[in-house]
Image 1 (cartoon, rainbow, N blue to C red):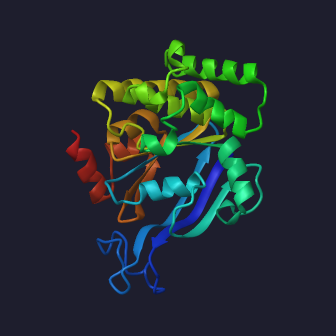
Image 2 (cartoon, rainbow, N blue to C red):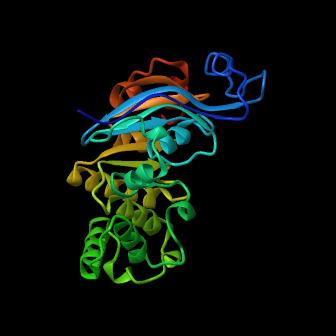
Length: 275
């Protein structure tokens, strides 16, 4: 059963002329409409994620993958959005839901690990305080319960518990990323969306962050969407993979099939570049 489903997802920046989708995409080799200049960040994206499944979205910079991540995480994009996002247990199209509904879902049902640390953490607050903030927003008011939950999550994400009361700005990049993961999991969400989770990390630190997430994701049986330009990240984490280019999905399938027997020439180029 799908925990999350998206249909016809699109984000456009500009004043669309009405023919933007027909004039952009992989077949045209561009995501800017030549008639009106509108940027079609993503369009015509369909996807679903099952309980406990990890869906990978891969593509180069500007392919539209982070725009899709923002829609799935119910973030305000600043652009014109289209399509439908549905979560199990929620009625209607969540892209058009009111602010209160979207806020409640972002707090309780959806975890989001941002690409940029400053977007996902308050650097002036302690590491434990960042996790506690998510719990407090969800309505938890017992101090001991909040602290125990934060301690538990620090342990599960391999962050030294004795650093919990230190400002998160004093943490290493890898630790900050793991605090984001702990925060995203704080309210036992049904879906976690990770946007470029290894950005700016050394290879050895990347491996530790990814191993931590994979272990915790399996333990919690949470559905996840992992967005990355790095095929290695997607190969390690994802059960199924979408490949995006010029704002469109150009290939989709089981990750092993996509990586070992790519059908689209762009996917072939991506996989050949890392062999």
